Amino acid sequence: EICKNDPTTQTADDKTTMQRKGLRILKELVALHTSRYGFEDARGKLFMRLTVLVLDVTIYMSAVWVLAMRLTAGDDTIIANGNIFGLSIGQHRRIWLLLTALTQPAIILIDHGHFQYNTTSLGLALWSFHFMTLDVNPFLRESDNPAARNTSFLGPVIGSIFFSLALNFKQMELYHAPAVFAYLLGRCFRKKRGRSSNENSANNVDQQPSHIIAAVSRFISLGVTVILTFAILWVPFAITIQPPQDLLSFDIKVIYQILRRLFPFKRGLFEGKVANLWCTLSIRPISIRQRIPEDVLPLTALGLTLVFLLPPCFILFGVGRGRGITSTREEHEQNHSEKDIRFLLWGNTSSALAFFLASFQVHEKGILIALAPLSLLALDAPNFVSWFSIVATWTLWPLLNIDRLCEAYFCCMMIFWCTKSIIGLPSSTSKQTRWEVDIFTQWRLFGFIPYLSYFTMVILHVVDFFFSPPPNLPDLIPVLFSVWGCVMLIFSFMVTIWAMFMQTATNGWSSTSTNPLKAQRRANFSLVVGVLCMVYNVAFADSFLIPSISVGLMRLDQWSEKPATEKPAKHSPFCSMHRN
Image 1 (cartoon, rainbow, N blue to C red):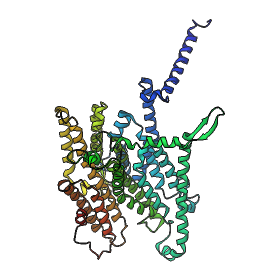
Image 2 (tube, helix red, strand yellow; image 1 turned 90 degrees about the horizontal axis):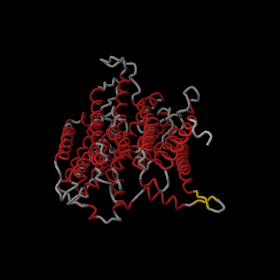
Image 3 (tube, rainbow, N blue to C red; image 1 turned 180 degrees about the vertical axis):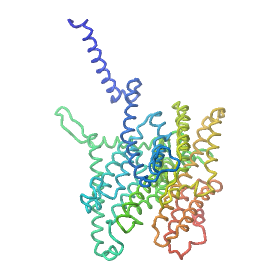
Image 4 (cartoon, rainbow, N blue to C red; image 1 turned 180 degrees about the horizontal axis):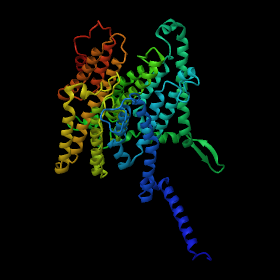
């Protein structure tokens, strides 16, 4: 009462009140029951959006920077022609790659417009890709202990911790899990580096038992690491306090409740108008959900997803084992780590697209899981990556339209397009061709696809803006977005498989065929067969038999394993399959 009218005391009281109110806002933001219906306070929104920005910079952007440094190593001493800033070719390519990865419209719109924390899980996943592809101990220098540094398995162990964190932060990281598992399983069987081929062949019999023991120990170390990481994160949920003695108890039912919420099988095949197979097949006259019983749909989606996952996982297992490893340690250090990270990025893109197209309960924003690793491959396939980035953002239009992000959508698309057009990509002087897996520059036959897709996307936008759908078909325009987006994403999935097959054939995998031209023709032929099979299924088959594409690619891979003198059978592998 004495200090009631003191201005200094009043100011202190106001500050204390504001601090208490701020803490109260944070508590209400995460309240157990009341916050589930939404919390619309402006300061709470500001706090949440700041957390997205902070996590975006500290986790996602740092991972993109580290991977960009690895992917652009070399050519740092050669000045790019016409470069007024005096940048080397490596620095110029690094800036171009960073801007391509960090200005992705879909990631910006979903995380900062639709408001999500996808970049946190994606950043943790990218960090895991970085560590698990390291073939040396990242904490030791060459001068400290060369033997321990070169034979260490610490990188994959650290990578498994980061990926476990990403998976527990957001369960959609399961889209990357098969590719990561296949690669790490192959890493368990990778032989020690630094030995010549003659020495390996001479000591092959003596090293066989020790090699098996090393593989088993590596597998156990990965398993123990993943189990411990999951236990640290999950056990606190299951520990409860029993009154009145306040005894600690472990309730497994809580874990079951969490799993039920993480995998909501009762919510149906897909969420909204997502551009995947199940949404496309649900339209008339196909109506796939009426043809297959509801309890069988999850198993059908699982089987189709597994078929799609076989080619990339098979390739990644071989990459993890170290197929095509050069004999000397110097060549190994220069090439193998870079080759691993590139294959892992392609494989995770293919795995994520397989889940997005065929798995159960897919959301529109799941396309970000495929977009993040692919955006870091802009130096390998610049035209394809730019096209896919625009397509992925375009498929999100129905969701962004509901969120009233139309202006932000067009602004982000124009920023990305201008960044791609203004900053030129200098050609590399290295012997390795960086553009060998860009389908739009490698095959002129597919050069019309970007223009056709852009034209169709613009036409659908015009129809959406200026025309109203018929009263009996209120969802006509979102369904058209979904169907055309599904067609483009199926093509993208086949391109990722083609790119991986082509790189395996040109990086010394095949022991029977060493002609790069033949390997390129075989990879191109697999893509053509897949496209023709898709067209045939759409036009003539009773159902959309997309699994035949992956089956055909697998058969073609079996042909590539045959001796060079043996030719494949004259009949097509798809004829008997369609008869069956």
